[in-house]
Image (cartoon, rainbow, N blue to C red; front, side, top):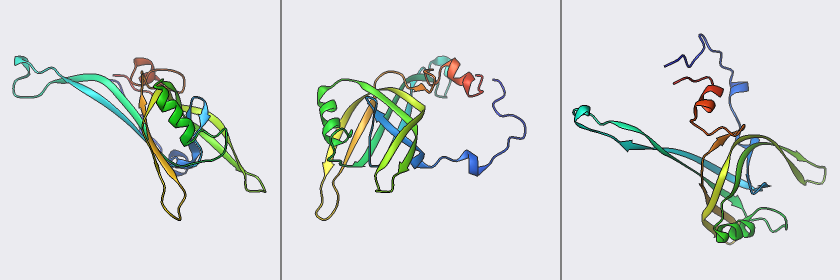
Length: 175
Protein backbone atom coordinates (compact mmCIF):
# COMPACT_ATOMS: atom_id res chain seq x y z
CA UNK A 1 0.00 0.00 0.00
CA UNK A 2 1.34 3.44 -0.91
CA UNK A 3 1.68 6.45 1.33
CA UNK A 4 -1.65 8.16 2.07
CA UNK A 5 -0.58 11.18 4.11
CA UNK A 6 2.23 13.58 3.35
CA UNK A 7 4.70 13.97 6.20
CA UNK A 8 3.68 16.61 8.75
CA UNK A 9 0.34 17.64 7.18
CA UNK A 10 -1.06 21.06 8.14
CA UNK A 11 -4.62 21.54 9.35
CA UNK A 12 -6.55 24.82 9.32
CA UNK A 13 -10.14 24.70 10.57
CA UNK A 14 -10.83 28.02 8.80
CA UNK A 15 -10.10 26.40 5.42
CA UNK A 16 -10.69 22.67 6.02
CA UNK A 17 -14.24 22.61 7.41
CA UNK A 18 -17.34 22.99 5.23
CA UNK A 19 -20.55 24.71 6.37
CA UNK A 20 -23.81 23.03 5.34
CA UNK A 21 -25.27 26.08 3.62
CA UNK A 22 -22.39 26.11 1.13
CA UNK A 23 -23.74 23.08 -0.75
CA UNK A 24 -27.08 22.25 -2.35
CA UNK A 25 -28.87 19.34 -3.99
CA UNK A 26 -29.93 19.45 -7.64
CA UNK A 27 -32.37 16.95 -9.20
CA UNK A 28 -32.83 16.86 -12.98
CA UNK A 29 -30.67 20.01 -13.08
CA UNK A 30 -32.95 21.96 -10.72
CA UNK A 31 -32.11 23.22 -7.23
CA UNK A 32 -34.22 21.96 -4.31
CA UNK A 33 -35.05 25.16 -2.38
CA UNK A 34 -35.66 25.60 1.34
CA UNK A 35 -33.83 22.42 2.38
CA UNK A 36 -33.61 22.17 6.15
CA UNK A 37 -31.41 19.10 6.13
CA UNK A 38 -29.85 16.70 3.65
CA UNK A 39 -28.30 13.45 4.75
CA UNK A 40 -26.06 11.67 2.23
CA UNK A 41 -25.31 7.99 2.87
CA UNK A 42 -22.69 5.85 1.08
CA UNK A 43 -22.92 2.15 2.01
CA UNK A 44 -20.35 -0.23 0.53
CA UNK A 45 -21.59 -3.82 0.76
CA UNK A 46 -19.33 -6.79 1.49
CA UNK A 47 -19.34 -10.31 0.13
CA UNK A 48 -18.53 -13.16 2.51
CA UNK A 49 -15.84 -15.36 0.92
CA UNK A 50 -14.86 -17.45 3.93
CA UNK A 51 -13.44 -20.84 3.10
CA UNK A 52 -11.35 -23.52 4.78
CA UNK A 53 -8.36 -21.29 4.07
CA UNK A 54 -9.87 -18.56 6.29
CA UNK A 55 -9.60 -20.62 9.47
CA UNK A 56 -11.73 -19.21 12.29
CA UNK A 57 -11.75 -15.67 10.90
CA UNK A 58 -14.25 -14.08 8.55
CA UNK A 59 -13.02 -13.32 5.05
CA UNK A 60 -14.71 -10.62 3.01
CA UNK A 61 -14.29 -8.58 -0.17
CA UNK A 62 -16.06 -5.47 -1.33
CA UNK A 63 -19.29 -5.82 -3.26
CA UNK A 64 -21.91 -3.41 -4.49
CA UNK A 65 -21.83 0.27 -3.44
CA UNK A 66 -25.25 1.53 -2.36
CA UNK A 67 -25.83 5.24 -1.90
CA UNK A 68 -28.75 7.50 -1.12
CA UNK A 69 -29.70 10.91 0.21
CA UNK A 70 -32.54 11.92 2.49
CA UNK A 71 -33.95 15.43 2.12
CA UNK A 72 -36.08 17.43 4.53
CA UNK A 73 -37.36 20.74 3.15
CA UNK A 74 -40.15 23.28 3.32
CA UNK A 75 -42.87 23.00 0.67
CA UNK A 76 -42.67 25.82 -1.89
CA UNK A 77 -45.79 27.08 -3.69
CA UNK A 78 -43.89 28.88 -6.45
CA UNK A 79 -44.08 27.51 -9.97
CA UNK A 80 -40.69 26.49 -11.30
CA UNK A 81 -39.31 25.48 -7.90
CA UNK A 82 -38.28 21.87 -7.54
CA UNK A 83 -40.34 21.16 -4.46
CA UNK A 84 -42.95 18.66 -3.34
CA UNK A 85 -45.25 18.60 -6.40
CA UNK A 86 -42.34 18.35 -8.87
CA UNK A 87 -40.66 15.61 -6.83
CA UNK A 88 -44.01 13.79 -6.53
CA UNK A 89 -44.31 13.69 -10.32
CA UNK A 90 -40.71 12.54 -10.78
CA UNK A 91 -41.22 9.82 -8.14
CA UNK A 92 -44.45 8.64 -9.78
CA UNK A 93 -42.73 8.40 -13.17
CA UNK A 94 -40.36 5.76 -11.75
CA UNK A 95 -37.55 7.14 -13.90
CA UNK A 96 -33.96 7.70 -12.79
CA UNK A 97 -32.96 11.37 -13.03
CA UNK A 98 -29.70 13.24 -12.62
CA UNK A 99 -28.51 14.06 -9.11
CA UNK A 100 -25.79 16.48 -8.06
CA UNK A 101 -24.45 17.84 -4.82
CA UNK A 102 -22.87 21.17 -5.72
CA UNK A 103 -21.28 24.14 -4.07
CA UNK A 104 -23.69 27.06 -4.08
CA UNK A 105 -23.56 30.80 -3.56
CA UNK A 106 -26.65 32.46 -2.13
CA UNK A 107 -27.18 36.20 -2.63
CA UNK A 108 -29.94 38.24 -1.00
CA UNK A 109 -31.39 41.32 -2.70
CA UNK A 110 -32.58 44.43 -0.88
CA UNK A 111 -36.20 43.22 -1.22
CA UNK A 112 -35.36 39.94 0.61
CA UNK A 113 -35.47 37.66 -2.44
CA UNK A 114 -32.59 35.27 -2.84
CA UNK A 115 -30.81 33.84 -5.83
CA UNK A 116 -28.80 30.64 -5.84
CA UNK A 117 -25.81 30.25 -8.14
CA UNK A 118 -24.68 26.71 -8.84
CA UNK A 119 -20.96 26.19 -8.38
CA UNK A 120 -18.60 23.23 -8.62
CA UNK A 121 -20.05 19.71 -8.58
CA UNK A 122 -19.01 17.66 -5.53
CA UNK A 123 -20.80 14.36 -6.30
CA UNK A 124 -23.15 13.24 -9.07
CA UNK A 125 -25.06 10.27 -10.40
CA UNK A 126 -28.60 9.13 -11.16
CA UNK A 127 -31.37 8.65 -8.58
CA UNK A 128 -34.92 7.45 -8.21
CA UNK A 129 -37.20 9.11 -5.66
CA UNK A 130 -38.98 7.13 -2.96
CA UNK A 131 -40.54 7.60 0.47
CA UNK A 132 -41.93 11.04 -0.39
CA UNK A 133 -44.12 12.43 2.38
CA UNK A 134 -45.58 15.79 3.31
CA UNK A 135 -46.15 16.99 6.88
CA UNK A 136 -48.61 19.71 7.84
CA UNK A 137 -49.08 20.98 11.39
CA UNK A 138 -51.34 23.82 12.50
CA UNK A 139 -49.43 27.08 12.88
CA UNK A 140 -46.30 25.80 11.12
CA UNK A 141 -45.06 25.74 7.54
CA UNK A 142 -45.53 22.50 5.60
CA UNK A 143 -42.46 20.32 5.14
CA UNK A 144 -41.66 17.27 3.08
CA UNK A 145 -39.13 14.47 3.22
CA UNK A 146 -37.94 12.14 0.50
CA UNK A 147 -35.27 9.58 -0.18
CA UNK A 148 -33.13 9.76 -3.30
CA UNK A 149 -31.87 6.25 -4.14
CA UNK A 150 -28.68 5.93 -6.17
CA UNK A 151 -29.17 4.19 -9.50
CA UNK A 152 -25.79 3.38 -11.00
CA UNK A 153 -22.37 4.54 -9.91
CA UNK A 154 -21.71 7.54 -7.69
CA UNK A 155 -19.21 9.82 -9.40
CA UNK A 156 -16.85 12.56 -8.30
CA UNK A 157 -16.83 16.03 -9.84
CA UNK A 158 -14.92 14.85 -12.92
CA UNK A 159 -17.10 11.80 -13.61
CA UNK A 160 -14.76 9.23 -12.05
CA UNK A 161 -16.61 6.43 -10.26
CA UNK A 162 -16.09 6.68 -6.50
CA UNK A 163 -13.69 3.93 -5.44
CA UNK A 164 -12.16 3.46 -8.90
CA UNK A 165 -8.39 3.48 -9.33
CA UNK A 166 -8.70 6.86 -11.09
CA UNK A 167 -10.79 8.42 -8.27
CA UNK A 168 -8.44 7.03 -5.62
CA UNK A 169 -5.44 8.48 -7.48
CA UNK A 170 -7.16 11.86 -7.75
CA UNK A 171 -7.34 12.07 -3.93
CA UNK A 172 -3.76 10.83 -3.51
CA UNK A 173 -4.44 7.24 -2.45
CA UNK A 174 -2.75 4.16 -3.88
CA UNK A 175 -4.06 0.76 -2.80
